[in-house]
Image (cartoon, rainbow, N blue to C red):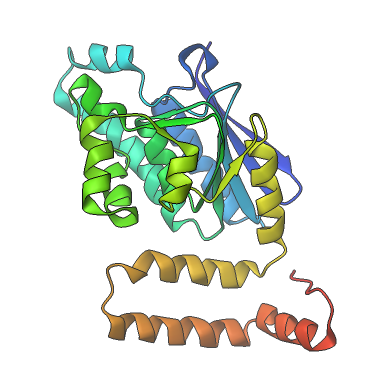
Amino acid sequence: MTASLKSDSHGQTMVLTISNPDHRNALGPDIYAAGVEALNVAESSPDVRSVVITGEGQHFCAGGNLQRLLDNRQQPPSVQAQSIEGLHNWIETIRSFPKPVVAAVEGACAGAGFSLALACDFIVAAHNSVFVMAYSNVGLSPDGGASWSLMRALPRATALELLMLGERISAERLQQLGVINRVSGEREALDQALALCERLNARSPNALASIKELANDALTSPLHEQLGSERDHFVRCLHHAHGGEGIAAFLDKRPPRYR
């Protein structure tokens, strides 16, 4: 079966499903390109206010296809470098995408699959899901921004333990560490992710885009620059139609209606 990325709509949420069930939804260049294209379309669509990324069947994503990686050893290094650039383009697109992106994880979430989940704004994972930075288990180093994400989310020793030892870690433990937002029942991750998106969809898309941009910049910007960015975003949000609607709805004691 050919690996693909399926797209579906649930209200104002776009659901992107990694479909490569014969290989536990292993990733590949076609999926990377489809992911970038789908988000580019969603960014300009007023009908899409959030995105969920999930896997078909019992697993989220087992990472890279090891047979394809083995075959690439017979090719010039530039072939694998180009493939990784495709993955990284998708990761950067998720990070800069102005709408919330939620990973809904069941089963295996390994290697680049784990990196993909970490790139999302929220992670909802079934209680029986298993996360593993599998790279060092096969003599490789991480890609997909895993080192960047984990070193910012966790203490150095904990991040290096995951990256270097390649041991499995549970959804519950990652929630305790602050990496995962919600732990669901088995086969309930997508439903909980969609419920989370419904709550996000009811909020101002303009404000959420500002918050995501500020959050992305916060770890690298000096305080003075971040304060200036917060000022500019706040003023723009206040004078946006959503700011007027949000304040009016609060004063009128009614739910806001953002259009």
